Image (cartoon, rainbow, N blue to C red):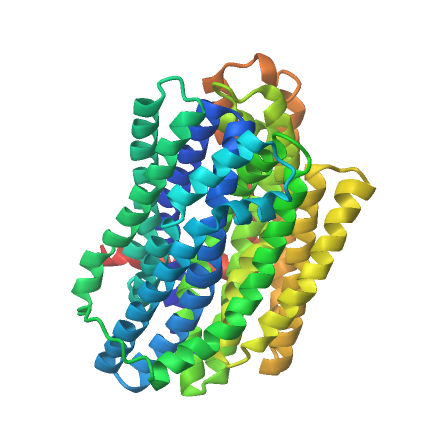
Length: 533
């Protein structure tokens, strides 16, 4: 138990490092979205750009940051634990070469078949000029997938070597590059920021992707990696990565089929829903990235090494601790996003061409997305753990079940009950919740037990503290929402930040008094840090 406790402390500290780095990235990503929404509004032009970016981003999630990253980190971590660094670096060279060759071929195919892909994604429901613009932007941005796939592989190497901060910061480079270069080139092409300037944003996306890859190289050299092209792919390690990737790609493809389904439903609702949903999902991803992705990033190498050593007790302890930490950090985030949706969207986005009606529609989607935030975060911890213990087919089967559930729920809430784009957001949250419950039950079956009683007790305490947070948010809405439209921007910002600060203090203060163990872990990390300093 001493080892397990030590591992937990490492996980908490490293999660903090990754969380801060991802916070910078998410804030910059939010600024990127705010700038683009202010310049173009949530309508036809922004719809075209977001749909074009969704295509390479979709395959990036499929091959790079999903299947490849999980399969590579799992295998690479085991190589380090069992055979040492040199064997792991040889595997890295083989996989890097294979990734570059394969993704280059996929990039060429994507550029050639962009019109067919856009038709598939929009269900042919857009006008010819909007479709043509989307095809052009897709062709420009498609090589982004190659750049970000290699960046994800580099991130995997660094994470397996317990270097978390620099790779987590790499996304900040992407956002900075896409904002500075995109807006600059867009202004040069069209100072009025019409459809022509979207080409500048697309080029800026490529520049940001290149910066995301190159910005990690110094850290990679420091841990001792030197790239040498290696085409000898008939290797046990490569075969293991590909074997793990197979079910992971299939599982991720099920997720991406859901994305295609959601995009088609949104596109069929006219101008606006694609942008409203994208902005709302971006806001939901802010705490998801800071907390869920950070915890999952730190936990995966640890559980992989525990599984490689056959230490089931440590594996269970690390995984359960990661899930409880995700609950602690995302439940208050979900409550805040749901109850303060309109003020949040208004303060961040309602500028330039982004109107009050766009705020109302986006806030409605955000409230329903917030319902699934906790499940999304815990899935970031649970899903990769199945690959660490060799149960690679389990997430794949569950993901396929989710396709049918997603299609039915989309139809039910969007068209049958006529909830419009809000129904799509609610369906997404329900599918994530179903996924989590199924995977948790299956993981508990595989591991024998998963500290369920302790987890339920922690969950009850966190929800009790969350009730106090909800009361703070309700009071803020009661006093300020009716007069919100007449309040100036900086007053709005001050009220919103003050509400968040009071709510957070109330929540974590209550959690401390209720003796939630993860809060005590976080406090212990800070105490030891200050003592060291």
